[in-house]
Length: 103
Image 1 (tube, rainbow, N blue to C red):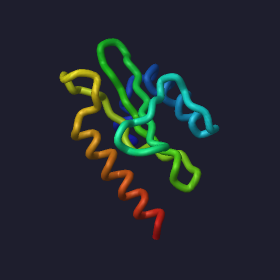
Image 2: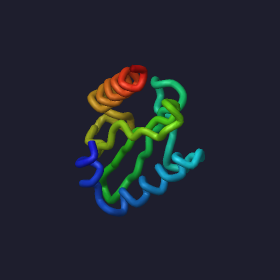
Image 3: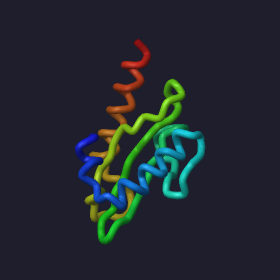
Image 4: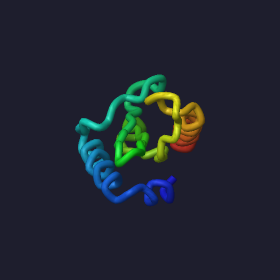
């Protein structure tokens, strides 16, 4: 996931870093919104750059820490929704994170 994020264009990373910094300090950037179907604390950052869309998903409700669980370039041609494959990745990573921190 980190390699994917580091491959984002610099202007996209700059905007996302600002949004993540705000989240780490307890506020919410205007480009962050709750990710539906995951419950409280799971947020999605969406940045459009040129003709592409870039996303990062983070959560804050585990151990009072900000966790970035997925970062990707949205390639779905079927509207603005997050592709199912990316939703599945987010769901699996959140589940794994919760399990690891519970032990």
